[in-house]
Amino acid sequence: MTDLSEEDERVSPSDEEEEEDTEEELEREIERELAEVPLGELHKARAAGFHSASSSGGGRWRIPDEEKKTSRANKNRPMEMSSRKPVGRFRQIIQVPKKVVRDPRFESLCGNLDPDGFRKRYSFLYEVELPAEREKLQKLVKKSKDPEESEKLKKHISWIDKQLKSESGKSRDAEILAEHKKKEREAVKHGKRPFYLKKSEIHEQSLIQKYNNLKAEGKLESFIEKRRRKNASKDHRYIPYRRPANED
Image 1 (tube, helix red, strand yellow):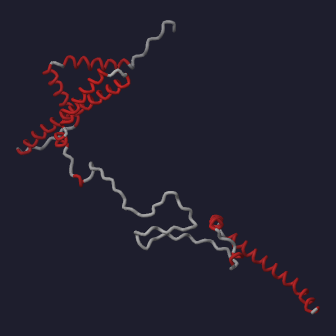
Image 2 (image 1 turned 90 degrees about the horizontal axis):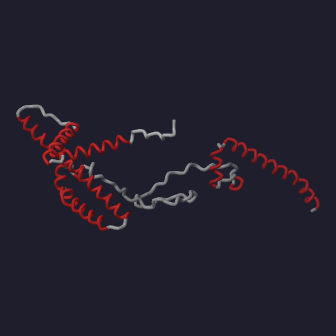
């Protein structure tokens, strides 16, 4: 028994040295492998929880492969997500059909826009509704004692006036264009080439028609005077102020 114990004591130091050598070689091999691994992949491996093979066996560092794209066996099933990847706050569990927004102005499904027909169908707004609303607001302004409320009512009245004025100009231009098209259709029947009016020519004819209407109603002088005062107030902004008398 004493001989065996002495023999074991003689063998054990060599075994320990061999184990130390193998550990050193393993560490050197791991260091060499880590030296060849890019730093970015190394950080990804550490963040994903991959450690040296000494803990799992195998003697090599394992870098995680790129995550495969998630797929579903059926489109109606929810998508499977990796448990290692943090889940976002907002994610789509069930895929729903995309909502398509359609603009009726540019969609052929809604038909073609007829400006003349649209103006005729909604002419009651400018002929009946807005003038009646304007009269009602004027009565409220006279009865109102609150300056802020009366100011809001006056702004709304001015908005109605702008709408009525704009619509009267558009309707006048539409009448001029319709009359011109009627004449051109008759001319084309006789073999003449059609002539298309420009916007500037329509505007010029509209001004001539407006001038004739004001002259027939006897409002031309007051209109010209009002326009002159308006232009004078615009020009007054560009006139320099008079210097004080004490300045040289």
